[in-house]
Each structure stands twice: as C-alpha cells, then as structure tokens.
Amino acid sequence: MTDRRLWSYKEIAAHIRVQPDTVRSYRKQGLLPSPDHAEGSKPYWYADTIRAWVATRPGNRGRQG
Image (cartoon, rainbow, N blue to C red; front, top):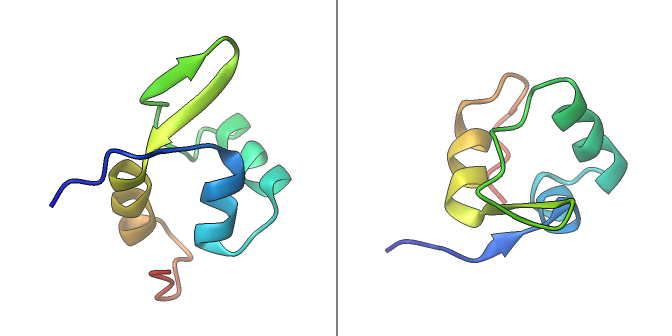
C-alpha cells in the first residue's frame, strides 16, 4: 500500500522523534531527500519517501515510528 500523504517538517519531526528545527537542519545539511512537493517556499515529502529515508539513514537506531 502506498502512502501519499504529504508531510511537512512537523510531521517528519514527530515520526523520528526530534524537533522540527532539527529536520530543517537535516535539510540544510543535505541529509533529507529532495522534497516531493512544494507550496510556495514550503517543502513537503510523501510519507513513503520519509519512511524509506528513515529505514536507511545513519543513526536510525531502529526507530520505525
């Protein structure tokens, strides 16, 4: 099943249990995948994109949320 809900920094942060500013920092450092969608200057990612990233990112420590 495909999850095409769009997540902002806030939803990503809740999923990986960090603050939204941490997720913004990850993006600035090039650690997040490219956004799947943008509304104005606000980036959004599909939930599936983030889940795939979480499964492969260093320091994951088994967080699957």
